[in-house]
Image (cartoon, rainbow, N blue to C red):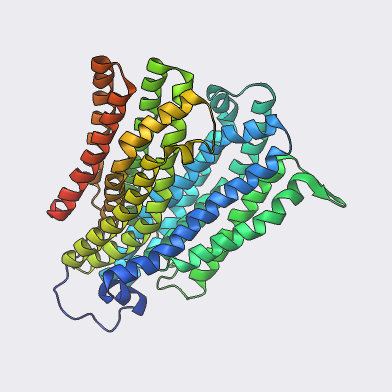
Length: 463
């Protein structure tokens, strides 16, 4: 089997009649209206998934402080599974499917379904084993002890016993998104969240003869959510409603490598962002203490909220760019990338300017501590006006993911890490003020956006 991740240049000739109408739409429809039409379901998915986490937290909070703290310990691990399975490996799957369909390699696209399932089952089981065997050590390292650690282990063991279902649902959803269908995964996610609202309290507290399972019930509800979602995604593909079908073929390394290459590099992008936040937090703590850390941590949450928003725009960019690269239409792929970058810039810059002008509106949602407000306001006034460049860089990362060419987004991310942490450390040593550190963060995010934009606009990303 040929390498699924490879591009297949095709002469600029009219499309053949054998191409599915949904694939044809990605190759011919007006770019900006299509991008907006495909983006809104993904934004809906992000809001629904955030709501699912809030619902679980709200119900578990009624079990007491230990239960709430235990769930908080597990939350980063659950988010890591979601981010890698849906964003990193999922992006590799969507990209490979889109490029195969764009190149007219229908059999290769069909074969990718089974390969995607195999990859996600493997990763799901691997992470399950890690947290089931070493959960106590992991959550202890994160600061858990006593009752909160025991609660964390109960919740974690249930969630990670069914972790393969999380990976399976997100993997199959990525296959569907790779065909350009953003709506069906959004419907499945939203219906699942609606069902989660009554199921969570029933399993946590019980009703009538049904016993309550406590914090384990919250984990069971989450596993049930992903199980139903995986079944729905599998039904959609097996029913023939999708442009790709499940093909029972022998597993080959080439398509697996095509998925994993893009997925592994995509995971590095997430790691870079978290390294910057963690490193800056350490610098703030060493220089100004706990109240300043609280202020910085609260303010920087706004940047974390921008990521799922940009994902809403970026997921259709993966499918649109990948399909056009597969069809040999690099010029149209570039126009899609520029349109998506412009859209992401407008949205994130508007949020950044609002946060810079009215920082108290965000910060006071979490605390009224004066020192916390002061530090958080300084960060937002200096860094938030440049959030638009973060929007540019991250949206073009999704475009590069679709093209299977992630070198320049990773270079841009590396430049950001060096300027943010290296420049920030130097600024603190020279001026002794957090404002200098925050200025380095602002320069870093501008450098990130400009580096990726220049590489894509000039055509370097495809070389």
